[in-house]
Length: 99
Image 1 (spheres, rainbow, N blue to C red):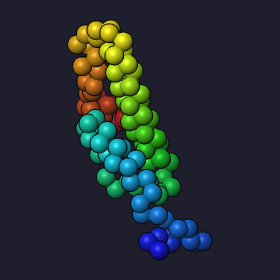
Image 2 (image 1 turned 135 degrees about the vertical axis):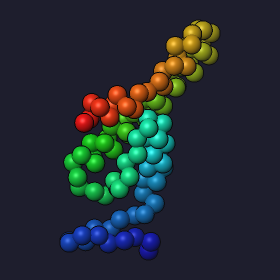
Image 3 (image 1 turned 120 degrees about the vertical axis):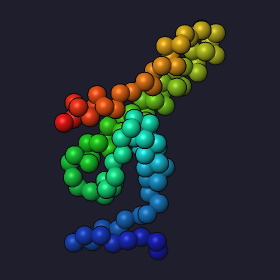
């Protein structure tokens, strides 16, 4: 119960599967000034899959970097302000590269 059948032959789609990942992906996309509107997890579009893969990778990389920063600081190593600037992102530059 609660599943939707999609396609021919039909496959079951769990509406709750991947909700956390989708939320993290959207949060990161918004942080970068990017919105993948109209792009859903179930799409077979290779470009959509690539974008989702890149965003998932960015979210995981940010998480891992945050863990490293916390461990370095707990070890008593002072990090300068360059760490605070690590999230500087130029969305316009990325848009020009994609165009």
